[in-house]
Image (cartoon, rainbow, N blue to C red; front, side, top):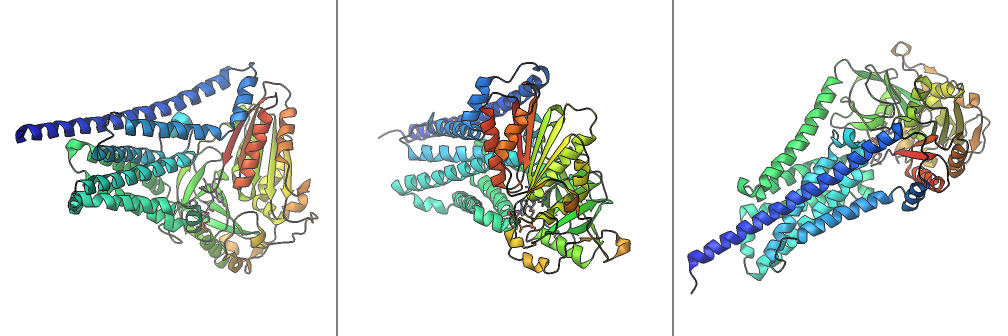
Length: 548
Ligand SMILES: Cc1cc2nc3c(=O)[nH]c(=O)nc-3n(C[C@H](O)[C@H](O)[C@H](O)COP(=O)(O)OP(=O)(O)OC[C@H]3O[C@@H](n4cnc5c(N)ncnc54)[C@H](O)[C@@H]3O)c2cc1C
């Protein structure tokens, strides 16, 4: 018979070894992911240096062809493969794979490591923004992938654990309080996972968001309770993660509070189911940035992201959908000139400096033009810039949508550097008489309830002047003054090829900035991709999308 003391000591040593191996896997996970982030930062800053000091050297043809063949989105897939390889290697290294308990525990640790990563990638005020010029919204796909990996590994952790315990007949141990909270965390993760189905997320965004936050808090509490001993370090990792998240929330709250005092908005209803919102306070931000608008009188628990058309005063052009935007539209209609207390959390977005490029091509669809107008107006007002010409391409479904940016259109039209290309896709009559206000035919997603609004709306701009009350101002009918409006969709391929061909020198640099529906964005990406196959000037692409 073996010595029970020695057996106990051997078991303790085995446990200690397993714990140290598991800690090793998390440590190397952090090192590997940290190294990738450092590589991105180095790549970004070396590109910036190369851009500013590498003049005269033409963009290497080989690199152009290589990046084109790879496709602009392939880099992300490569990143995912590296990330999953790191997960797999660390899940299977320094472990006795014949012991199910060890395997299951390792999956648990890998899951916790991914939990830290996914929270880090979700921070709005992320250190990656200044370091890698990547704003939080560009990190969202990575956050999602880290989230799915976290869910997958935690489910594996649970399944392998249960099968290991059932083998040794120890399933009754599941009733222990510490163990029991594990499956609760797993269920909360699964709920988050299922709620990210596009249909649910886009259709019930507010519900999705509330679920996300409550389930996340539940996960943090239950994972902490699952492994509460400080000696095992899991609870320390959980506390660290919770601190990261809370700090981000505190910063966001502080921004909201700072922008709340003395701030109010006035809303102007525009034809074609849109609004123009003007805030009384200005913002310090670069053009093209966005901010989260909070109007407590309408929806106290919600804030929504909108791109700043201008920052002094802060102004947004908003397309009306079903929830918050519909309430804002109703307020504008029922109480013209109404002033509502509001605040904003922002600004966010790492927008490239368009001023350092010789040629700028801006492509927008519908209300995505908030982004391109903000960039274009800033460029024409700037004195210190390399920009020689701007191609401004705007695609709208209805001619009346041109009224959304009437003043800005006139400014651009009269500027010699700007080549205005406007396409109206939803109607063939380009005489200036608007033919349709049907929300259902809009190129952008419109809610089923929109008819409620539209039956009340008129193709006139409601005054935002409180003195004038409900009086309505006729529109300036900008569409008749804008020259060269074209029917149908633009050929983005041709337009980008023409911009590249029109460059005076091979070392001229072109930037394409695009914002709008995802199909327009993918067409633009492909067009840039195709153009990169030809010998010609270097092209930088920056896209913004309004849907997560
Ligand atoms: C970075 C960014 C900038 C944007 N800029 C503009 C802009 O300048 N002008 C403009 O008209 N729209 C813009 N949008 C879109 C705008 O945020 C949504 O249309 C708005 O939040 C819809 O709110 P709702 O409650 O009225 O709509 P709902 O009918 O509830 O939803 C309509 C759509 O908006 C999405 N959505 C709803 N709430 C949010 C939210 N809080 N965050 C993100 N998406 C949400 C939903 O998934 C759904 O697909 C931007 C979005 C993003 C992400």
